Image (cartoon, rainbow, N blue to C red; front, top):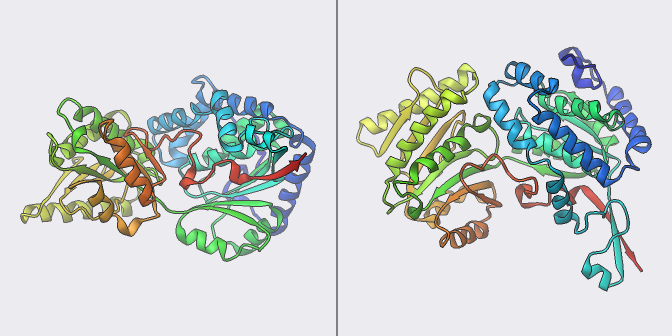
Length: 453
């Protein structure tokens, strides 16, 4: 399947971007928004998004086949990892889920189509509408596509034209999303633009910032700091910085007949998207006192990672990253040999996966690429003490506990600042209605107008 060059990112590395080209691109998006997008209804946008999702999910779709055939070289993810990630993300884009999202975020499903009132608003003689901005800009971060796909989905749902800035070499999957939109609805597709450039290109980004109405930025804390220092005062900005995720296994969740399934779920969380992104677990904490020891849990996880490697192999990584993983393996191997309370399980003759048991509960960042720490703790309180330096930086905690203990542990995590708690096996597959970093995923993007009648 050969794709036409609809977007700046289609031209590839030979594209020469200038501030004037970016300005004209943004102004063209504004014109197209006024002609083709501003009068669309919410139901029309929902139908388009569902059709886009079905195109990605259809095993016979030429677009899906292009992604799976060309994606490994373009992204570094294997065909199996791409398949799993695509299916997990796009299976959430359903009419029911989109309508539920609108009700969650806006109170009333028709809020963007007409003056609408919730029950409390109606009793107070009020109505309101929510409006998307004309031109929404995104600065995306890294190869993991989920955040960019979600940003584009939300932008389409609120009927905003969008300009997506991707890091150099990272536009393949977002670009194919935009092509799917263009294929199904060329007029809406003409309200999208994607380009690649290296972060910190101040002249390009100054022109970009001058033209857009709302900016979302995803990336490292350094990226956010750099961007925010150059944002003009009028530009509203939403930022999504660096976060980490962990797991917690309560003592009553480690029974011998449950531990294998639990280890399989942990292995899925570690291997999905090759442990890239903020939702990937760095550490799995295991509460002591259960019928299965922490070392036994680690061993079970290692077996399941070895099995997953046969069905969902990791993509190739750089020599530098591989050397870093090897160095950490040696460090913990030496510590174990010298009588330290550590143990290492690792893929033979490769760095494909690694499990390190370490008795010290202090949070240790993983080098990722299927490298996970397993640490014992007395209880959830000790885990939170061990992670105290990360307060405000933890995105997701996967929790395995009995039904009786879940509310208590979850309340501890929420009070500490965790913004998402889920079951193991679901860490990298948040629901469509997930409030990213504890904030509204759609309501932050709109402007409200209240009518007092």
